[in-house]
Length: 123
Image (cartoon, rainbow, N blue to C red; front, side):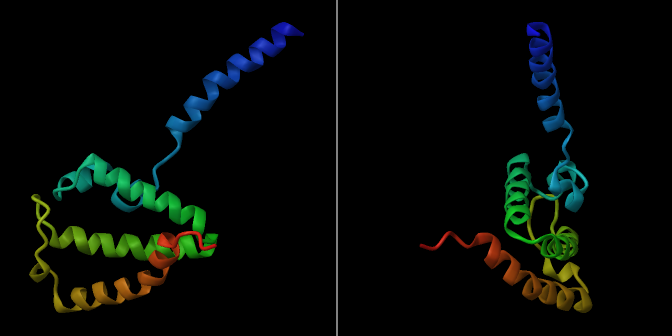
């Protein structure tokens, strides 16, 4: 009995860290990898901040809301990456008029989600 208990504890001790390392980042769904954000003047820390925000979104939004939020967020990030150079400086003129309008529309659609994500607990 003691051997089985010890074997079970050892298995859990090995499997839990492995599962944590194997879990994917939500930010990878948006950027592909941290290298993408680094190519546009970002850092590992900014990537982790975005991941943290996405994890909060996962907790605060319903599954349907999260799905829509992730799709809209991915679209706006792609536009941001297109207008941002390797030093992190934004050049809005790199976007066409249509892309600028799309950016504004995406920002307005995302605003309610960001409000819900960023709201603090009210007494």
